Image (cartoon, rainbow, N blue to C red; front, side, top):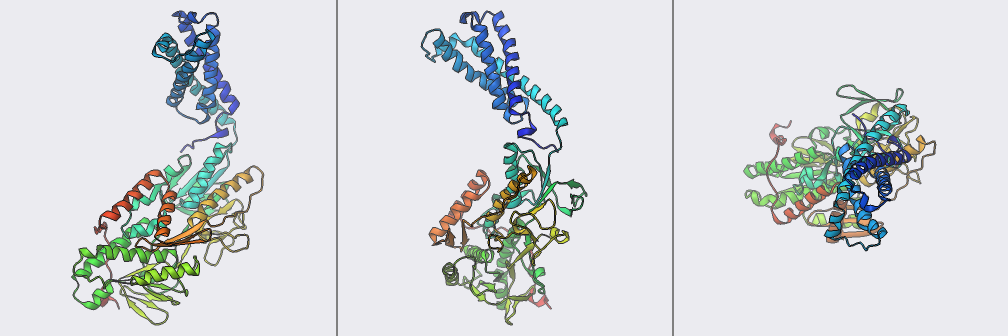
Length: 573
């Protein structure tokens, strides 16, 4: 696949201007000769030929300066020349030429009719200049490309906020004069806006509306859709899983993110639902709706209670939002299930800490706890899961909660690719980097996002959030560009702008630069900020429409896929 190049990969500014001037003069001579043959320049006096030659040269200069700045096809170059011809005719023949001949420009239909032949000549000359310019630049670019040394190769592994942020920054650096060959490899062809994933699980948003194609997000970066099987740091090669293709690199950026991290607890990995991908969100939604269908027809009170019990492990942002959205989903659709009493569904959040949302202030954490408890959500604080089966969840204090659904939101671990990577690793498996984002002990390897332990000024790790990952992506691109130019990379610094957590039922809690917000105002801020952060105007419009429809119409209860059937209690041994 050929990488589209910018800046010094195309002819330089001086070469483009010379090529444009030459194309303008050649086309001007040709069209001027045609107009002189038709006796169309004589009306302008002795200076007619000189003026047209100067006019053609200036058109060519503008063509080289603006149209030629980015490589394009012949149609774009010809269209650019045509537009310049029209502008030149308006400026010169309708305006300046009238002033030279001592008349006042009128820009009327009559005045335009008087210089109509010049309009045809200007449009023809501009179009011809554009085509000639394209041919010259292409020939020059191909010849100079063979003489240039190979551009430094950067491979980015991971298509999340960090990886896409780095690729976007490299594209801007190439526009500014750097010459870097960038390839982004991801096992997913879309960028997922994870802060809104819980709303997909509750049916409030369509799954495709919070994701955008990676190819569209980084249109000028080479993209490979596939999974990386191995990173050979000795040979500086990345090997893909499907066909074993080897991709050499000079610098490697690891942005592989994280996956759900299950501790060594019996049955948790087997029976727990997760919420890390679109498929997870859709699967969880279908499971909840399937449980409601079964409970509506179940006569055994104990089995009904188990089917309608939902347990979420983890009291951070993810767990709190999931339990709130599941509560809203269930109660918003209960009118479709007349056999289920509104008091039957049970929601339990299990958290090992003494308070939920430790990322927020204690005041906001207490506010969130009070709001959710007032709706009937139960909290088991200071305890941990010890085991899970298909029929119940067991806690380390000896309690057993019969439940048809367990959602794990109590921790993640870096992607499995890092296990075989040499170098220093943190306790959770993430690679340890210095403050410039370079991996310790590995030359030319950098890491960002959830898979890296990045220290701040005090040595504490930065939190694994989307806003940190995107800025780490920009920083790592700047640092690699600096190293390639013989400079020194800069330490990464970033202060969290703010954090918000949705609590369902049009309430939220959060902080912006330490200022607390809660209730409806926080919910409106949460939606407004996240809507603005969504990549792509089309996605923002779609999400806005989803939110509007959610206010008017009931949530859909269609099960879109084969939901995982919960194991009947009597079948669990």
